Length: 215
Image 1: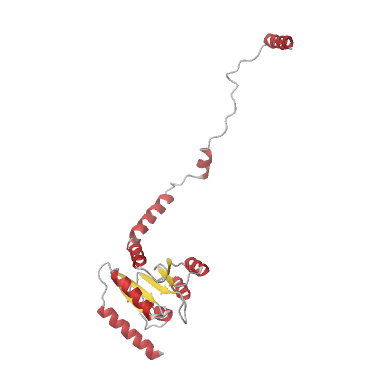
Image 2: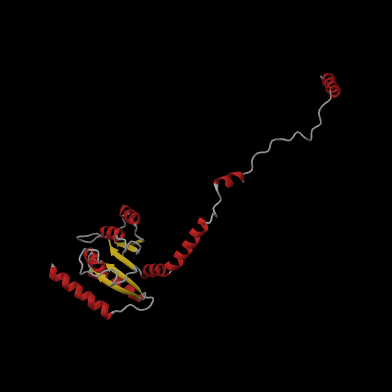
């Protein structure tokens, strides 16, 4: 097991040396126990101009991110990851368990995590989304799905600025207070009696006599 870990770290070192990240290039960590699915997602990401690192298990992903407790593992200081895409059903550690580990990390919790699965199970989808997954994709993953995700990531800074601006406006008191809201509601007006002239006793008696004659 120790030897396998050393080989894994050596392969990662070679990958980092041979594939330097370009300016503005997104780096995606793809996790899938299926060799075929790894190759498919790797190809889709590269077509979308992303730098891709592929690993075959959740344990390897944690080791790559430096979340396995091993001091010799790669960490955030060595590798910058913009998005993590992981299969749900994997032996040893599921994609859901990997998602929880990432969201528990103070360093990686803000990184978008996308769950992939060939099974459309609503309880599974809801659980992943509630835990903080950015999206749940059904396999086979399409190029349009990958490009939509990468576009979302590249627009992240712009959206964050908009959110910050909106929060600043709210803190400045742009939301009307409850008292202002209720005071602006029109209240029903009572009928005004100022325009009515009082009836004199003579007029009352004449009206009474007129009613009696009609009867």
